[in-house]
Structure formats: structure tokens, C-alpha cells
Figure 1 (cartoon, helix red, strand yellow):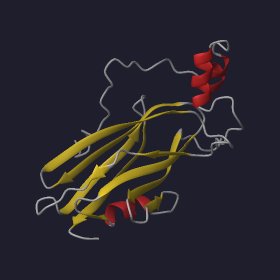
Figure 2 (spheres, rainbow, N blue to C red):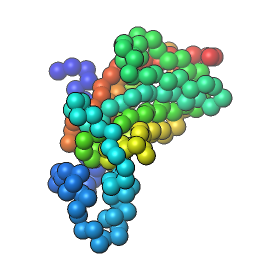
Figure 3 (cartoon, rainbow, N blue to C red):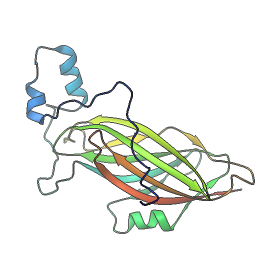
Figure 4 (tube, rainbow, N blue to C red):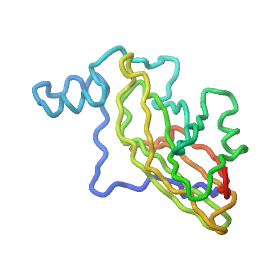
Length: 195
């Protein structure tokens, strides 16, 4: 058992994963149902040429990760760059104690509808750890009209004080309702008295 075995999505009470369908099957569903038509449009179905790469079997591709801090330039990690994930683990973000910040991700979806994408995170400092889960939503394959998606996560406040400062390790992953992991990575950050 590894230290990250406990990082898994919690089920949403009362939610049942629906039957899997192809894009064509969704497009043919009850075309006279106005609410279903609007739902399909919200997923980008039937609107524009798909950008799915037939040579890339991945359903969800995380393109970049970012850290937004009010009053400071965003820190963006381009995951298309070789070695980007290793850099996240070995070169910690620096965050001022008590600062408001939030993470964001840019991603693309291809081949089929991505249902119930979630972001999971476990942050540890010494023997203490904290887990969080944030629902990102369901997405249709990207099209020329919508070439990528961006999700900004809930704002957080960095710990402060003598006990809050220090080095933190984190593991994060993007997982869908089928429990398919689309990306898992380790990263770290340092909470400092100043920038």
C-alpha cells in the first residue's frame, strides 16, 4: 500500500452514474425534449467540428495547472513541456502566509463525454494531512468553437503563524465518475512569512 492509496473520490449521495452512451447516441436522444436539448448544448454536442485526435486514446488531457494570487502574476505550469510534472514536485510554489490563492486547470476532452470530472487533493505537513475534493463537472469533446476548458477552483487562504509556515507536500489527481484517473501528480509548496 502506498501513501496515496487513500486519495479516492467520495461518492455523491443520491447520485447514480448513468448508462454509457456514444456522442451519436446522445445526439439522437429525444430531439423534441427542450431541457435535454439545452443539456446537450451545454456539453457542446452538435456544435462544431471536434478536435479529438484519433491517434491519442486519452479522454481528458490536462494541459496546464496554475496558481492565482491576487495582486501577483499567475504561475502557470505548461504540462505539454517535458519534465513539467517533475518540476512541480521538486520546485515548490512559494506562498505568503495568510494569502488568498486558488488553483486552476486548463484541459481538453476528446472522443466521448467526460462525466463527473473531480479534482482530488491531499496536502501533508509532517504527520498531519488534509484531503479535499472538488467537482469540476461533465464536459463534451472540445470543438473548434470551444478548443479547451478552464476550471478555477475555490479560493483558499494559506495558513499563517509559526505553525502554519513551512514545507507542504501534496498529491493531486483528476478522476471521473468511472473512477478513471486522468492525471495524478505530486507537488509541493512553502508557506513563508513574505514573498
